[in-house]
Length: 47
Image (cartoon, rainbow, N blue to C red):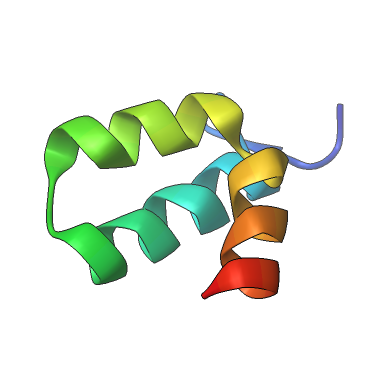
């Protein structure tokens, strides 16, 4: 897979960054990292 950096996909990295900036919580960042693109789409549609 070409879009994987250190074992994390681009969607995971974006989701973690958005989650951290919105919540400042490691737990939520991990959960949103697992959801990756689903959370990114949700964030841009409903935030």
